[in-house]
Length: 315
Image: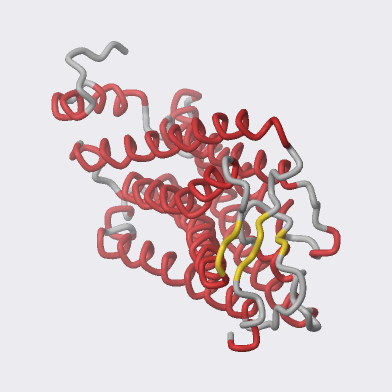
């Protein structure tokens, strides 16, 4: 990173063109930030407190919610500060750090969604072998593999960006240090770096998605063999919300990252809305991912009522 010492800080231009709308956007995204945090903390707390939810499905859900909390913390707080600030700067090191953790948690989420698809496939297609195939040791190994792989790929991407020389403009046309707007500022040929980053992005997004599609192919085949309509409905309900989250998450991620940087949209607001929608649907999918009876048992648990300061919970 020695070649990059000519630029010591970056100026984030995201939202600078919205003028008087910035206070409104601040309230909007602050509300979204609090909803995401409170929702995910609720999920984590409920799963930890209710022993009946100590299953592989909810273990991965807890890991995903934790990753989403950090993923949100990496971006939104600084974005909220910039909405109320005149000078929206970020040091060179802070920009690289933000990109590293943003990519790390984002890739981890993609890989976790793939693992959760495998978990649902195993539970529905091989219920008798499920306790062996998805033992706690296997679950811990899968979660650790997702996290380590996510941050290794993130390290590669961040290094490819910040190993380039930055000696010209420091104006980032985005609301945080994302790959495409930052790499455009490099004063050197970036084709090879962008190509490697693009290939990594394809692998990170497409490979887990293919794995999920294969898993759901087996799930659908198994569900169609169930004789009763009620049995089919119950089997599908255990993975319906996961499927919704996958569609929205991968749809937004693909529209933003799986295209050449020259053709990437310069509209910052569209990207924010896309990510916000993905987070909201993900949050909703996580909250309603459990079966109705399990949610009722969780909410009426005295320890959980005490946690949220409620004496009565009506369902």
